[in-house]
Length: 59
Image (tube, rainbow, N blue to C red; front, side):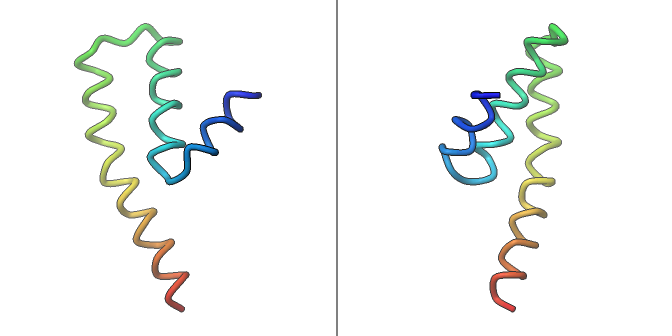
């Protein structure tokens, strides 16, 4: 699992999400449209997780 370590080093939540999506797209042979839809769905999830992280940090 060298890929996981290198993707985390890029820093930030998007650094972990993006390589995962690319790998999943390659594995399942998704079309560009499907992968784009996945990206759009992941944006609110990423923002929500970032909000939780900032809340924990402020407390």
